[in-house]
Length: 348
Image (tube, rainbow, N blue to C red; front, side, top):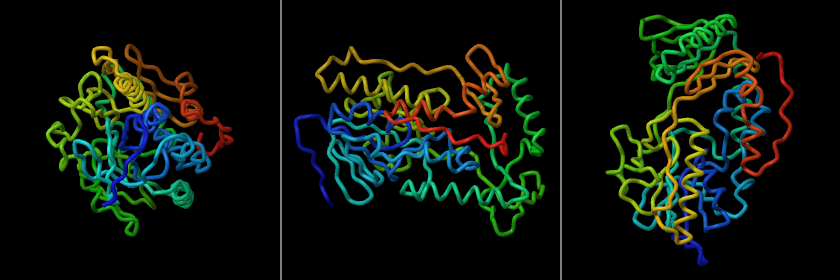
């Protein structure tokens, strides 16, 4: 077992998870502490750009970013955390990494390729599968709980848009994912219906990335759903030097990228205060947000729900559907926006 120590007088901050929350936090404090980011992959990916990258692989050149591009003053450990003690994190490859402050941001469990090149090639392969298919099955859709009753007209708008694109909807049905196979190209629904399709994509929710925590000192800090219980300062309840941010937390709000970023900002502010000897009474608080979401409908239209209104059409489409906030996100990470790939009319 290899024990890793970091020299210097600055505090050691270990961030577990290289998604939106973990990556933004690590970037924010990399010049104020000895920061170590532990992630099973070598890159950060803008998650809300995934589907666009599937139909347009060149888009992934901007949305898949090596950790080394924005973390110029931090240590990156490409592995997974498997255990936590009061002072150290144990990784899957046998490293013991000491910490003064720990931030858990493991989000949802997913199997991504290790390198950026492998991820880009994966998008190209999926795109080829789409282009060669005459019929495609998509399993999963928008959770109705994400939309309040006032959004009924917007749901109807989304359904109308989908049907206009010759999408056949099978609502209130499920597909047995364990029986799915690319070989047979036949899929059974919970209603006993058989669907024939050349290929399929699973767009259902993913399990939380907290299973490993159940074997650590934080095993009693998980709720019944496997989320980490945090206080208003984003500290794990009852812990003075361990924070949790992003989708892994039990904060009662939609799990969205821009909220994970806001949590990272609050946690970074509190870490800076504590590392500077500030009083805990001065720490920033995080308050759950009301439901707000924008669902793209192609490149030009979208359906949007805001706290007090819902709208659809070109206006919300202008807010998100064109660049999907990728340019802004890159800028926030201190990177060049890069040119948005030329829009193709094929997916309009």
